Amino acid sequence: MKMFSRQNVFFVWQDLLLHRTVIKMILGVMALLMVAGILPLGMVVVGKWHSLKDFILLYRYEFFHLPAFLFLLGSALQTNAWVVLRRYRTRRQIGLHKALLVVVLAGGVSLWVAAVGGLCTMFVKYVIYPNMPNAHAAFLYVPHSGDKSSFLYFLVMYFFVTAIYGLLFVAFIDFGGNRFFAFAAVIILAVLDMFTVHMLPYLFYISEQTAPVWTILVLIAMMLVLVYTICLSSSQKNYYVQDDLL
Image 1 (cartoon, rainbow, N blue to C red):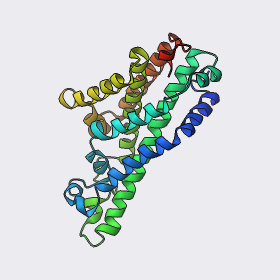
Image 2 (image 1 turned 90 degrees about the vertical axis):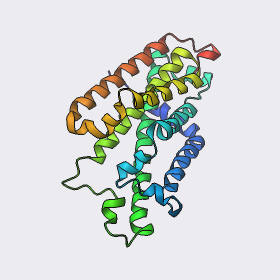
Image 3 (image 1 turned 30 degrees about the horizontal axis):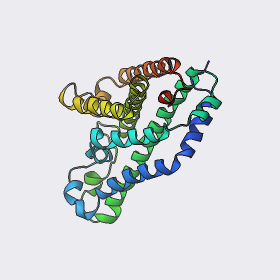
Image 4 (image 1 turned 30 degrees about the vertical axis):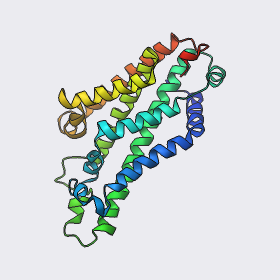
């Protein structure tokens, strides 16, 4: 039996269409803030990055990318009671719906950030600093034999990390019922990582050179555990009560 059915995919797409205005606004704000970092007024900021990955990470994941994604996810989770009850026959299906929504949004945001970042670096090279010596090395991500950091691997890590934090956000909502505290808890976990285990730097920078396959397998396992947890918590909820809605 497949984890996510065609029915889940259709309803997730339907939710995204219902909230497309808010989604476009949040993604647009993210893009505008990233573009602001390459304008001539931000030359000091531009000087701090030399590749597409560095440009993306210049906007701290804990304070920029993750909050924006959680706002995006929170807006898409605003589903009316009658919609939930008419769509699915079991509570487990509702849990799978929420998990798939997280995965789809995480994938979409990852591709959006990569696309905007790529356009920004190309704009710097060909428009703002077209005659600058070594502009390809200073401002544009150009893979070469001496580069030990693959942007594709970084993008995969970005997706997994974002999806895991999103699943945690949904799980906290299911168990705690308060979106604000769930949002705060996820952000606090990400910020605490800066002062404790430094897992984000390991995933984004180091894991590709140490254990890329095992890292990906562990992250997949974590996602499956969180999906199961969300399905389990959804099976305990009473969706006829207003406080137990998505």
